[in-house]
Length: 430
Image (cartoon, rainbow, N blue to C red):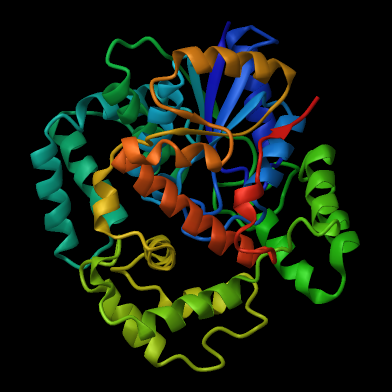
């Protein structure tokens, strides 16, 4: 049995995701291969709440080609690319059944990608030293890391368009997936499938084809949902940009009261109010290097036009808070960590301590039976499953409680009771 692991956010599930699943099956030449994505939960890598709750995005994926959907815990999903990749790859490998791992890339130079992954990360002390040196000049961590990798690649005589490679979010994630595989799959048992991304760039806000980015789709939803036009207008704008089943699920669940689309401006205002009232958020994850003071000062100077109620896509806020030193993603992750109560001690937990099943179909049900026998860590179907395991595993307890706090924040944003997560069960698609 071929089991293809995929790392995704499905925020929301669009045509590019459907293409990735279909293409992965084509490459392994096994139409009935099990596809098992591990997906961000309530918060994404960018640091903001997802446009839809996990159960909605899991159903979208299951109706559009996936067989089993797993959840990546908050501490790993709302994190820099290296931690995000290590958490996701580790969780997939921990199932004990994954034979292949597929992910998208933004370059045709697969050889260069592999060469950089194989040759530029062996000396961690050297890489860290170079990164710290660049950060001291006042640039952000992602920029410093890219320059450090470029330096090492140059010293090793690696040829190719390194600048283009390191400027693409998807390619940087791909590098981190390859590094995570080297760390957790030391015997090289897992086949790696890299699939060229179709359509617009990862963060592109333009819509030039049916392969629009998730960013562009979210912007359309955020700008349309509060405008009084509602679901009919969203359906009109998104038809052709998402698979019909995916779009239908999202709109029907929204119509049925399962969730409301997030009010991002309201969420950020709540975050800044919390930051301004917090006596010492310095120990919160990602708040180091003066960021906590910067956020407190920003929050103290907030005015009605800092985050207008009409700033549904947070464009005004982002223009005002962003700096060369502090990237928007880091600010958002720090704020999310503060709201969920994630301090730096959580970052010492290097691998997800359990596997959370978000949903499955009939083929996935059979796969889950095998996972139940092969998994290296506990498999969880509902939150209550964790309660009896907490006393045996301190890391599991910490990550589970953090996930439940993040879920409470998420459900409040989606207009539901903050305790809704306790009632959640896996989505089953027949």
